[in-house]
Image (cartoon, rainbow, N blue to C red):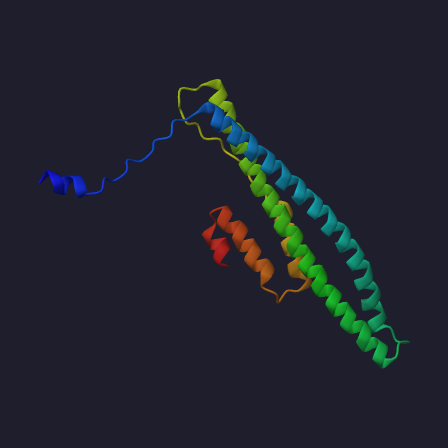
Length: 178
């Protein structure tokens, strides 16, 4: 019977990792650097898309005006109308992208605040008591961009979807559904 017991493979015991404050601090620093890089990337992206929107809007207005002018030939009116329609779709997509970046930026801010709060708690040594910090999220900029996109192409469902995503973040089930 002893031989049978020896042949049964032993299940390895789980490794228990102690909270090594040095490792935790290094991980926090790495996370903070990553979050700062993300925020910088989002700011650069938003700046780029805002300037692109302005340039596209100028072109859209030009072609839209030219497609409806009376002194244009029928062929050039059709060409201008096609270009105006393509530019309108580009403007719409641009606004959706700007709204997404604004939404991501707000999510990043929330995480950054939580991370800093937890770090301050551990440094102040609050005897392991977990406090909750209320974080107000302001998705106003993202909502405004999605609504602007909705004005450009009211039959496109993408802005509705993005607004529903924000509603789920805010635990507003009714708004998310409708």
